[in-house]
Amino acid sequence: MDVDCLQVISIMLKEMEKLLGSEFSINPMNVREKPNGKMRIIIDASAPHDMDESVPGWLWNPELPGSCNSTVNVANFPAKMSSVAKFVRTLYRVGRNARVCKIDQTSAYKHQHVRKEDWCLQVVEWGGRLFLETRLMFGSKAAPGIYDELHKAFLEPVIKMTPKFSKSDVEQHLDDVLGVGPSNCLLYTSPSPRDV
Image (tube, rainbow, N blue to C red; front, top):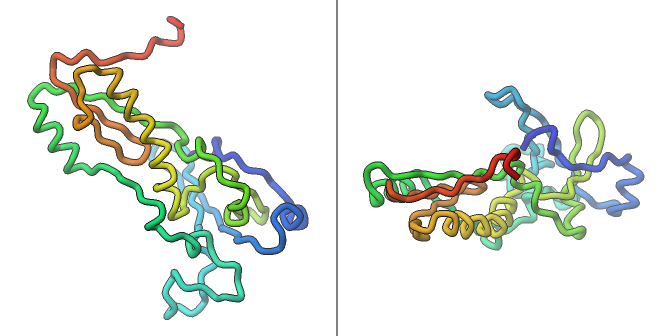
């Protein structure tokens, strides 16, 4: 997630209370530089943390509204993803001179809206200001599973664009889809903006 794609609403505390009520979690945010020089936003969706370090991180003070992640049962949000081992097996099965295509969705989580009922878990604090993230939040334990359902829609176009691919030749890991086809497979290429 890049700083330039964060879609948030900056709101003062009183306005946030009017919008969400008095019980909402505040998730601290930080940034780290990526190797390409862009900034990656890091949201601590497990805050607030209990001050007693002997208390497990998933347990929070019942006096507090709890963190976004403390309310998530990950079993309700499964993410069925591939792995490097599966991709290597696919390459081996297809054989030498395999052709590979890759789709990587930009700002992947920003394509998924969050229900208004869950906005109270999506308040982000940065630089002393509060923001409301209305899209899927990077850092939430539920985000990969929620996004996984949406991203499965990208598997079908990969298969249709390359008729010699079979479903078993396509691997998906979060927002990355890799397709592997035989050497005689014609890969679909998008027209350049000039050709459209």
